[in-house]
Length: 441
Ligand code: EPZ
Image (cartoon, rainbow, N blue to C red; front, side):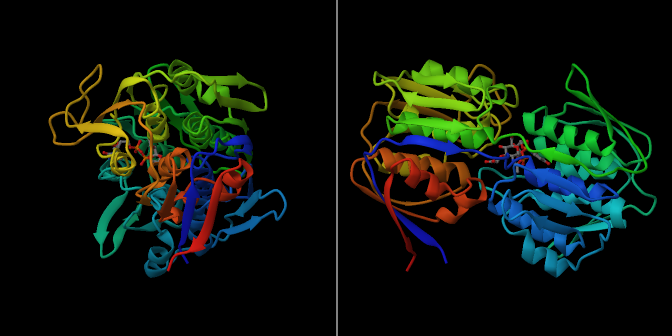
């Protein structure tokens, strides 16, 4: 049953939240367990929908997944992995993109995979051409079938020299999950090097994989026949941490984010300070707060790591609606990630979205009709309104805009937010937000 959040705005969020394992690592580490010949244990696992989707997909393929009722730690045992029916897989894929990463591990485990048509946030076309090219280079046979793609490798997977046209996180994970047990050496140039990628490499190394990250964004993998299990504590979710930081700015609040990692948020922290946010960086987390003065506008460009992460952009744009002056944001990772600004404009924000690359370098979307640059003028008082959540990060941005607005907002479609923000309504209540949850009629 979907729910409706009725938010009465104007209350600063103050208190502390606990952020656990990263949504963009945990499901991949779960898939990696399939490569092992013994059970694995994954710790610091958040209770989010993406973990539920991958749990049911793995169970469908004969992997036992046990969740510790107290800690939430997962024990995954792949020793009885088997094929699954495509209709069953289809039903379980949900709106996740993770199934595409099951290809390599399933081929190693059972010789084939069926991947249903993928979901994921509607922030762009979200193609999987890089993934399919990579699998073919490893020797897989890729066949389009009704409802999805069938992938097999009669002679097994062999190492390859691969160059990605763009440092895609997913395609890099596809290589890592396929190459570790492939025959021979794989060299991947143009790889993504996000903290979640490095954490996945740590997981695979614990299993016995031989992976090295060179200085020039090249990753080298020496295939091994067998891998063992792992015992790993997932890195903290830097995207959720940054979302709460922006929430503190937008609502003029003060939030201690337990678990936030300075090392993985360096670029965000610099930007947060330039906007005028206050922060105290500790060993067990970071306190983010509004210092009471004016917020400063800035010119921002999203990029792959170590640049400003595209998932940080949407909550921060809400903070920029409260800055004194004109800010410019050039989104270079996804072609259509400003749809969420429509609701902010209805709330009174002054935002124009443009086709031009309003940044230091032209990106892949320049002159291709994608409105991927935003100009935000502030400060503008936001007023409550009815909102239907478009995607995960845009949805969280709508929540914090409603929390800062005067008057009441009625927010629907909030179940999308459960995909990546663990127990977010409980956390909002703990921070003093004034809202009711009711079942949608
Ligand atoms: C991961 O998506 C994350 N999702 C995204 O987080 C994140 O924004 C993104 O990486 C970039 O850091 C998960 O890890 C589940 P990409 P992914 O492949 O792997 C193009 C969130 O809110 N591309 O790096 O799908 C693609 O269209 C989500 O937590 C191709 O063209 O991202 C995009 O323009 C949103 N062909 C660019 O690469 C391909 O085959 C980056 O995509 C694959 C990607």
